[in-house]
Length: 115
View 1 (cartoon, rainbow, N blue to C red):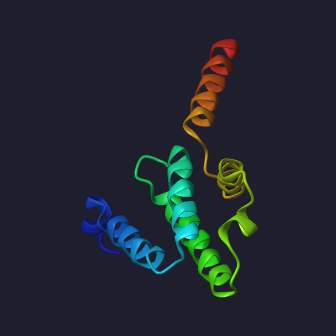
View 2: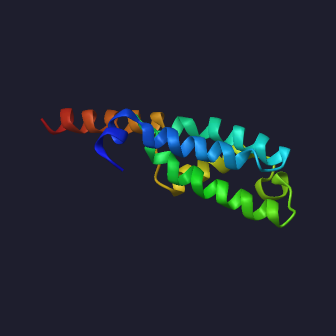
View 3: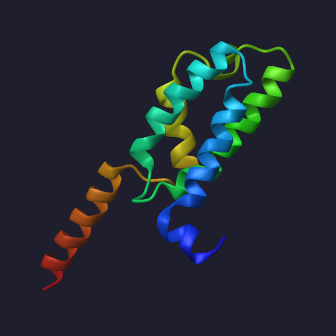
């Protein structure tokens, strides 16, 4: 990836367009699950969203494999997609905005207490 693509976000746009074209080939239940997963994971994005690209790519590959096996999205995800997203993001080390604020507050309090 060149510098210009990284600065302008063209690399992210290219990846997201690739994901979109791959999702369109999936069954409808997987497409609905994908939309819900992307919405729930956005709270764990960093400023650019680059940290979510590998996570989304892995989920999409998993969707493609299970759809090819004839499984339905609800069979593999269960009923708690939000919980799935939280577990997925925390496993991959993606912090939510609340986690980032908590870390900053803890650092500020520790700094004040140590003075």
